[in-house]
Length: 558
Image (cartoon, rainbow, N blue to C red; front, side, top):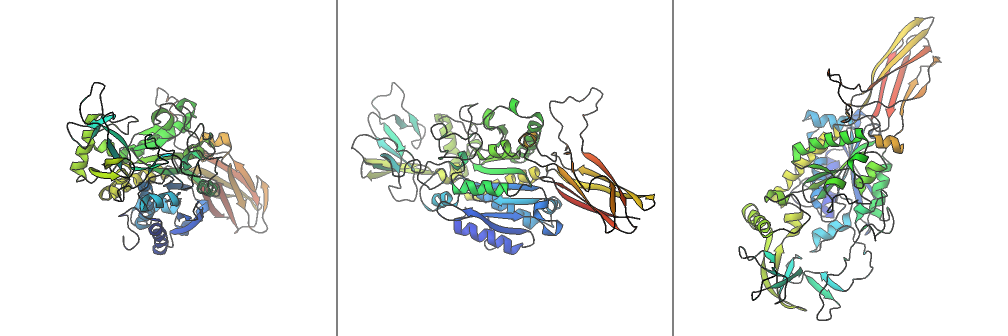
């Protein structure tokens, strides 16, 4: 990797722009770059299309979609998306598996859905959830607003000496703050708060102000959308934001997409549908496929694959409304996953992203891991500072951005590579429609019986999911016969709709008979026509499935 094509940092918008254009220039036969729209602040939202144009038109191949960085601070996802695009191009013609996936599929990669938020995250001390559009309040609200008070380029924490404070220093490590117990008296105690300044401070009351940037673009999609009072960050209405609307319109404009991967941080999970209901409410065949493909991801990443509704939300069984990949599955019937990259807690020997405060023992483990593995760079030692409103305080704490939320740079490529491998496995499970055989048998008197066998060589069915059937999200297979000049079709249709073909998915809820015969999958379909034509002409059959590709074969009439 040379020049702009390097995954050795978290890319600013200018660096990201240089990267995608450099990739196109280096591999013009494989990679195309496009803008799918503009962000709230007017930045282009870049997308890459990666496929081998010599093996077919991009829209006639099964499509696989990747996006990242819908959340401003989750920049590991952008790095992983760029790494994947670069890997596909570099390894084409070198690695057989990658070559096949680039030849037979079309990859759509949006490395940064939210360029405004990521730019603020990377170039200022601020942290934010998503868009830089002020929401739901147009003006800053009263209370503690995040600010880099001491000018060190970071927004950390402040510990304020207070005899009635709720916190004290750990006896095992003074960097660690632990809750004050009910019977603690006579020691040194503190109040603990984020680094910042108090807007309209009355000299007494310290409370956290509502977030200046309260939008969550990953709650702004139509699937089970609910307003702000029920789902924080949802926005005023579904797809109200330019970023989410551009994202949705791009996907709808590419109906060949069968599968999708959205990258997030942090915790080390592979998340699958559903976000709003239990597994028992999913079609059994879909659940089988989601689990089986997710198990491939667990093999290469070490991350468990869980349902958002049943295994990930802060309160188990609490619906998460308006999420992107719920829209992909619920409304479009795509096989979609959302990966929470980077697992600092697990690396430190802790429970995987617990939705609760750490105990003192867990906090000490995290500090020990930081000292041992990161040379202490993940934690900023507390240092005294004269705060203009609160007086003498100490500022320090975890460098959350590039230790807990995203990996330190020496560990970035490792994270990118193993998660890229899951997308290769997921893409390899695509449906794949072929014209397996096309023959012409002379019947005499200028008549011919033309026969064809359509076959799905992929893992997923040509309709992809049962949910797609329910939502009528996939058109039936079409078979179109083109005859030579002077030919006449006597039996059969020149263009007909064909029932979808199963893949290799075997439902978990269908028993295998005791003598070992598995339920049969209907993966092939025979078609026949009778044609009157002069000999020597050529008949061509074109078979098309919206999400399983297009195949053409010709046969000469003997």
